[in-house]
Amino acid sequence: LANQYVQRGGIVSFGSYGQDGNQWNGQEPIQWLVLERSGSRTLLLSLYGLDTQPYHTYSTNINWSNCYLRAWLQTDFYFVAFDQTEQNAILTTRNSTPLYANASGSPGPETSDQVFVLSPQEVERYLPNRNDRAVRATSYALSRGASTKVDGNSYWWLRSYSDYSTQRVQIINSQCNFYASTMDDYAAVVRPSIWVDVNK
Image (cartoon, rainbow, N blue to C red; front, side, top):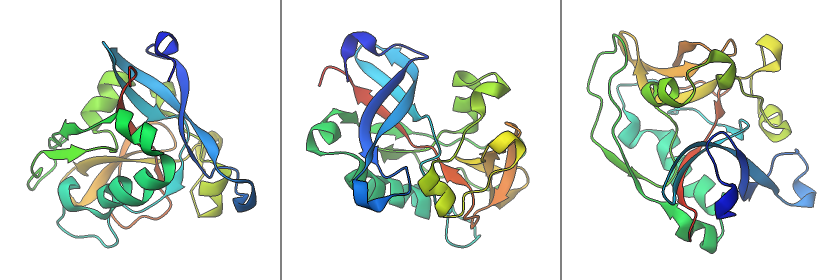
């Protein structure tokens, strides 16, 4: 990342992932929205929905700390999307996952994550306007069954329990509102987030 160009609200490229649906031409650079800059520490959110994965492979009483999506982001996605130099620049983040609205159950322990998805509270902080929450799925994600509804938008995972149920998880729906989805929804897209040290 070019340090001087990384400013809140900007778009930067970092890492690569298959996005155009053509597996024969290699991976494309990932574009990220800069959500926060604090010294050299920078919070990034993928500009597009890069893939479709369930929060968990079946609906059960499970939290972010041991769900399928977290494991996939830390392993499959991390090692495909980032080379060694990029991995060295990604900071390990201590994430809490507080309950949201009228959610029930345990929020789970704090986690140490290289890659994660946002909590509803982080969305409210960094994307306070509904229009800022809209996301389009990549061609690759669409080929894997990503849902597109209102205005071509997809809905994307957050990491907190939904209202009243530990078997439903908060999402941002295609109308850019907070909503609920079952954990085993394979049509929701993933918008990874990472903290990066731009001096590395």
